Image 1 (cartoon, rainbow, N blue to C red):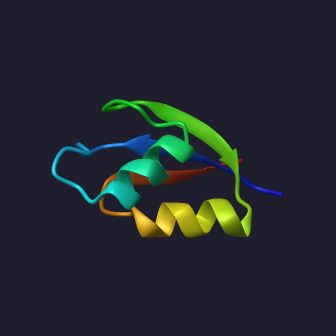
Image 2: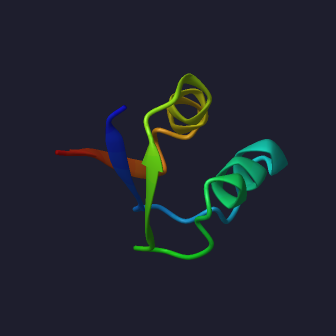
Image 3: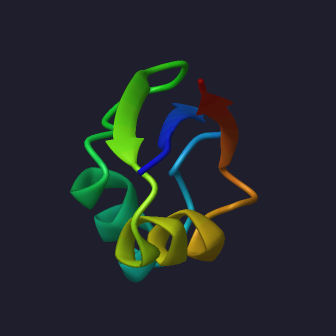
Length: 60
């Protein structure tokens, strides 16, 4: 399965609690932090929910 690199590019300040929890579930706690995950449907769904706060790159 493919891997993706998720980078937090916008702050979680003044965001709904469910978006803050989604960031934390992905392992993102501060700005410009980068995490790698497998591109599973559940991870892609979480990324889609907060796509305005993160940038995503596919790792080859």
